[in-house]
Amino acid sequence: MILKIDMTSDIPIYQQIRNQIVFGVAKGNIKAGDSLPTVRQLANDIGVNPMTVNKAYALLKEEGIILIDRRHGAKISNLGMKGNAFDPDFDQRAELLIAEARMKGASRQDVKMHILNLIDSVYE
Amino acid sequence: MLQSLLLILWLVFGIMAVSGLFYKNHYDNQVLGVTLSPEHAQFPEVEEIVKRFQKACYAVLLLSIGLSLLMLVQMFGAYAEFYMVVLVMVNFFANWFIIHRYQQKLLALKKEKAWTYPRKRVVAVDLNVAKEKGRSSFSAVWSWLFLGLSFGPAVFLMLYPESQAFYPIGFSLIGPLCQLGPIYLYYQMRTRHTPALSDNTEINKACARTEERVNTMAATLSALALLTFWILLNISIVYLKNGLAVALAAFILVVALLIIANWQQGKIRAVENRFFGAISAGGGDIFETGSTWKWGCYYNPSDYRIIVPKRMASMGWTLNIGRPAGKAIGLGMLVSLLVLTGIIGAVLYGGSKDYRITANGPAIMIDAAMYDLTLEKDQVVSVSTIDDIPAGIRTNGYGGVNKSFGHFAIDGYGKCMLYVYNQVDKYIVLQLAGNDPGYVIVNDKSPEKTEQLYQTIRQWLDE
Image (cartoon, rainbow over all chains, first blue to last red; front, top):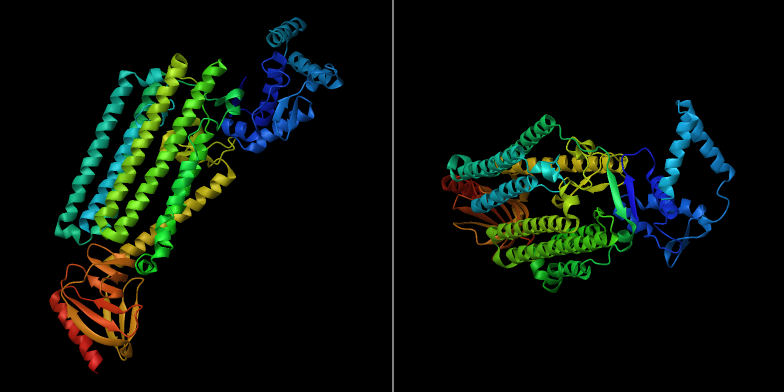
């Protein structure tokens, strides 16, 4: 799996790492049990401070997407693939995005089409 | 001495010319620090600018060498060290000027042709490649072994303490300290980012493995070159006692480092072309580097690295002045540079200032920059003249083309203080009661004036 980190983006680098690993797991590019590089290896390869990668891994661990083992490093966990997909947080975030689209003048039909395209890109 | 200075000058001019000529190569999607895709870099207009830049580099080199030969003329030779510093400054400025001028030409052409590249800097990392980092590198044992061997001169001084008379043990630790540089470089090279341009992870892995091997080997060879220089330098100080041999050792180091850098650069280019072919030729992960460079320094507050590769990675490392720590280190380096300039200024001042030797009651005072000396009458055992000073070595002092003063170790005399004009073949030797220093050797600007000074000292002693 290839991570593409935009060094000039306003989105924090740790957030970009976390988001792309979530995308990778969702699309099946990395599967439960697959190991991740160590914090130092990944930080050196991206060219960032190890604390940045550490923060991303801590976030992923908190969300149950990865497991961190002292001996074997970080691994993708299947815990993140279980649980309630549509929790109140999901609804709140999705609702907010739809509200923002409507505020900018998108019609109901436009929003539906756009979301369907996004769904296709994730479930391809 | 003058020949050694000339050799050092030519070495500096050569390094500057070769650095400029390296800079013109298309590497890391840049030519002369201007972002250009491989396709655009092959345009005839670009090639013409590069060709003219190359000619300008050679012209500056030849002109600098020609001007340096003026040091052989008596009028310039009298101020050889000062003239040398001026020439080096002029050469630096000329090289900077031609790089800047041709950079502007390339930027104008880029604007005219409307060649634009993404301003976003996206780093692509293959997770499977990152996991393998450090597994294909050339063994680190060699770099550590070279560090161990660089302690050789220190061990020699401990085994033969008499050598410490002219070679302080502290100096012998400079080598190991410098040898830590290539070790740092080795670990930087081992974890260096490798492009992940292919969707096929196996191709990315194969490229990363080869690049890691090449980069770590280049760092190890640099360590070997530095160790060779250090050993040759010590041999020339301890056994040969010849300034030319020291300059030759420096020449070998510089040439070796340039060959290694050229080899590493060419090899990495070939590896990327072999594995990524068309993707690499199309610019790969090209982005506009101009956006991250300010006042000739790397400036990227969102990049957490403090030490980053230069625009041409193989040219070394630079600071990210966009980060607070980078700013602090940069400021520290600037202050150090100013202090160093001050020291060089003081040395040059010392080199141009005449000695003043005055008898004042029971004491004789020698006024020389940084190495003033006062001798009491009862300290002086005898005074005599000689026509030649035996071979020796400067331990802490100034050794220029025209003057030598400070602490020296002279064969047959031991520890001496010298205040002499090198071109005058007549010296006054004052033997002292102690042995640190055991002798003070002085003279004046001509044999006649030296004779007068000798009579003055004799008279002072007899009073």
